[in-house]
Image 1 (tube, rainbow over the protein chains, first blue to last red):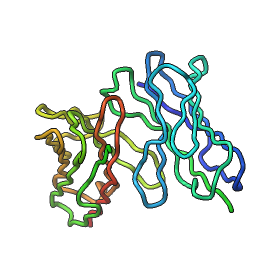
Image 2 (image 1 turned 120 degrees about the vertical axis):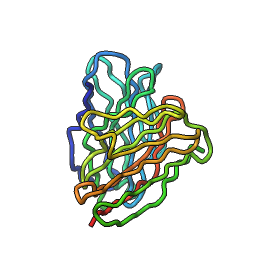
Image 3 (image 1 turned 120 degrees about the horizontal axis):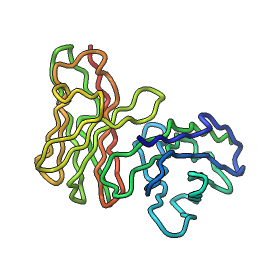
Image 4 (image 1 turned 180 degrees about the vertical axis):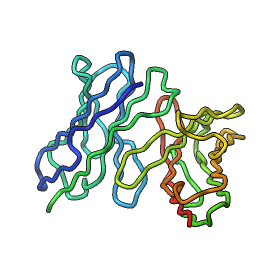
Length: 114
Length: 113
């Protein structure tokens, strides 16, 4: 079974700092990769996704992620964070066809200090 | 687009009773929906896959007789927690699949007294 690792469980940054959240998965076949965000008191929202093609994907709110197949990684980045980015971030994986459920990482709690 | 709703958002029940949670895709049809469980300050764990018109498939360790799933239409899946006990208290979240992407509902907080 596949697994997803998020290395940083808690991250605290100041506004305007750059962000990179790590995500690694373990599965040798074709995968679909996702980042979801959960703002306080709200439901999971899709930030961005990768299925195939250009390994650098851009999502909403200025986020981007890069798929590096050789490293089994899909790290999330944002060049300049805002206070409103305070949230829980989840990396998730599904297998090639996309018909299966998602395997989630444990999440990263991001706090942006004004 | 791609909005998923859940009802109720919160439910408190007595031990031994059954609780039904509804998951609806509002602006798209979903042949497949999923049910997850999220413990406090933890990640989501897949419980089962709900396929329209067929039996649900459950993840290892999830009791199918306790968590009954029905997916009778392309926009509605229901999860019934039967004979609920305090250890079933949790946050239950559904998702609906549109292509390869899953869109999530707002979740249902179940508290069993």
